[in-house]
Length: 514
Image (cartoon, rainbow, N blue to C red):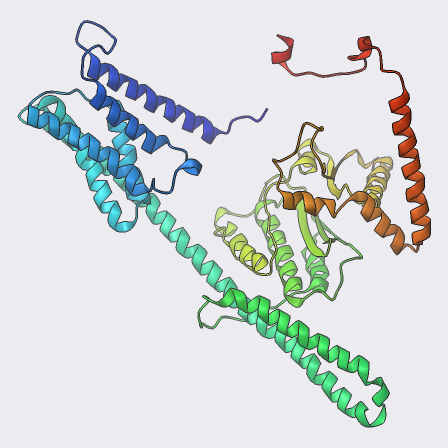
């Protein structure tokens, strides 16, 4: 069972306090002096104001309809509260207010100042503040001397809440500017990369054209490979321009410093340069990863590794082993960087950066159709917390699993202790025939089906030179064995019902045992 986070507990406590305060309001409004229960009438104005206010404050963000904007959330409840107070003033009838309505109006004031559009923030904030200041008039009347003290207290609360909301809104605005600037800078950097990509291809075209001209008079029969190379370079140049220019539509015309563009070969130099006497870096590159990948893809992979290693230095300086993997995932390049750090760092807080490195990196990766994920590791990533080695391996790749098991077994036999190996795989279908597994995206299932372990193993065998005839024969033998097993199971007598729970262990916790 997943434990509740401190933030979730605090939110639950705040909601409970708000609901309790609203109950107090109802009891105050319905009190006739003879019973604790709300027996006086009418109660409906108080209930309407409280229910509308609670809906505005507590309605879950992900389930709010489009029309429930911050302006509506903050303006409608405040207007109802103000009308209730003005109605009491006109009819000269006292109506008691309580802490629930006060807290609701303060919450709505906070929402108005922080989340409403600038012009609406002034109007909705003033309406919330005015409704709060009218509450004493509703209860005591305009001539009561106690009203002045309550109004002063209300002004203090309004100032504190509005000041906090303005401060947080300012932080949001500054962060938004920083994120926008980071994205703009990254787009400008991509524009510089575009020059490098196109220059590389055009230079190749120029050189090969010169070679073709020299060969035209002496060896015309050998021109075809040279012309094919020119065609390929031109195609790659156009593809690079099309993919890269697409992300520059709003980057502006400002110049930016040129950045060095890395490639897959540069990743090896990067990892070698990062390694130190206390930090070991291992680069594992799938042989299926080609050096002929588009240059913008190689540059993005280089930047991913570069940023990841930088974050290791900043946030996991206690890591002793960093593993960089380059893998071909059904035609896509998969880059992963993992470390065994526990979050310790030797850098001062000022050296940790502003947290926008990943923003720019995501901009670059998504611009070429990729996906970026960053965060703490699960599974084997917890192994260092127990003082043992941890490693994650593609559980669908039989060869990768065998190599990892052999390596960690040899490590254990050498006396270096145990290790936790996490083989990541995927269940293609539901838990049973009654489980259609509709909770998983179809694209995710399709991607994993293309990464089936049997297909991967077959591809490995083909690369090793095993013929299709031998593989087909093996498929037929395996199919025959499975069919015979199914037939034997169907023909076997049903088991004794007394054995239904034999050799079965299950523990549903205290709920089962009681």
